[in-house]
Length: 328
Image 1 (cartoon, rainbow, N blue to C red):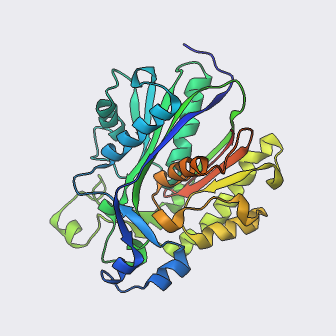
Image 2 (cartoon, rainbow, N blue to C red):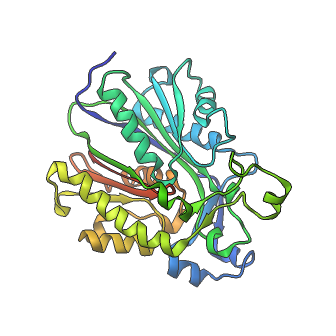
Image 3 (tube, rainbow, N blue to C red):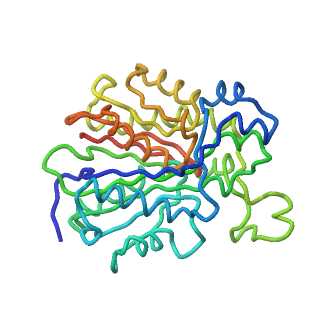
């Protein structure tokens, strides 16, 4: 048992597949254009995993890189959490497969399935385990192979999504760390984005395959409307206990869903453009992995410095949402 008053991120890592799918290439696949995609989403390209590359493979590699950055070995990890809506299979949990790939022994491992909010949920859950003294170090990974559940004949959705993974090692810190977390959900809006078939309600059949019910279905306009309010409200709720104002936040790392959503959220929060980190142009929407990869890249690019207060903010299918304030 380990008592810890503060919990912070000790190391970060990301993995992105080599294959890049550009808007120009999508023009040859569906009835769309580079200009249409860029104007409405802000996306220019996205990464696509190999056929033989599963979510657990990407998650494990991101985890290895996070461990290296933290200067820890897998033997130092007491808990593994994987946030994903594209597990290798229904069960066992992808986290268990990652545990095996990393060589961890008898370490508790489980998945979190809250779509794009997954990385924040995972960080918040791990922080509680460490703060309580139950565990000392946790590995939180967000990984998605959305290309596997994307309908590449549906131009409304296939332009949005990409694959990738990001990971964070959490542990006790002397200063800073996670200052506040806010999580929420509204199941009444679950129909706005979903994968209809394959579960116990609509088991897989020849007809569900023919009807393309094993791919992402989304009500884009309604999702947009809710997303802006949800993310702005979540930011206010997570900063309220800390008495923080917009000027106190050094950088906001929002879920990379759609540039129009992000611009609307920034306006609603009164944030200037230089305070929002964006990488949607290069990767599209990677669901849970979006926030994780964006955090990794923001650190690598020097956008985050010691003492900075960072706000992570996301919404996802469920509907779910989460926000987190970290002092670096």
